[in-house]
Image (cartoon, rainbow, N blue to C red):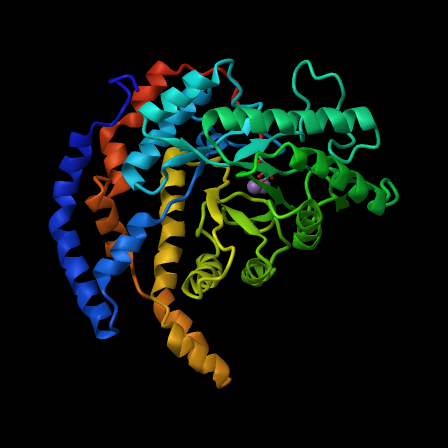
Length: 432
Ligand code: RM4
Ligand code: MN
Ligand code: MN
């Protein structure tokens, strides 16, 4: 990255020196508390260090709503500038080493050059997202009435081809996963024949699946509504799982936390998918009403912890076929996206670390004895533990920032990139 853009390691180290004495004190105190529960803080910190979550390339741009988009300053104008921002997120948080791209938003002519650029920033590539929920300039057939499930075979074929093209671009970048989300559905009762639409989805899905390299996975993402407000073809985990089962072993379900009706028991969905080896991964975000794409842990931190309780439980039991990918999928309208993504990554890591503290033997015992209060209290004891010193120590040990937002602001990154990136009035991510 051009020298004038990046935050220097010295700047982060300098800021860390201000916070280190306090952190050491807090870490030692927490270490003593955990030792009384026979938990070794060093081991937990090591597992915190190993935690990784991918950043969505579209998340570093300013999002918007159906009504408007208010661009932020210094927004990345192309995938290279998005990578620069992602590198800062990784530099500060040390748990976001990969980027999940979205095509054609991130399309370039030379993928070798793009891969080398990411390599030089120390970034790798996570799941590739295809986009058939929008018409692209110059596209011959419209997705207004659907893509993979369109009534017209040529339109379906165009959408299938795009997904196969995404696999090819992903191969060139070194990815090994394709995420498919379609907005196909209906806005009016009677508009669409439910069964025929799902059959068409499966046919298209089979064609994409057939093009998948052996070591790749295909993740199917469900979402209850929007843009189809009456019925969406892959509307929930039921349709998602059916599709994943029909397509084959390499097809798995992806859970985006914002894609469910309010109050849905998402942790239970996660458990079911784990049980049947179909949990592919996550798009973490938070939500008050629907697909709000709010920062992770900002509304329902306990729900996020309960999801990680299931994940750590599966890890603990060495559940066969378990190994979901963690990704963020958020849209930031009123914050600096770099700050929001750092916060979100750390909030997901926080849920993971808290779930590691759950006394699993005690929980099993209370469950077997139908002791509801003690079972709940066992979870709450872990959830109520402030693990901030563990997260900060894990970052510090890897040259990350003890105080990521403070370091970011002190470094003046946004003001610097604002000068180098004059507003284009256009963002690769548009309204997400
Ligand atoms: C969708 C869904 C997809 C994401 C798009 C931008 O609601 O969450 O994962 O690619 O938004
Ligand atoms: Mn998503
Ligand atoms: Mn979404």
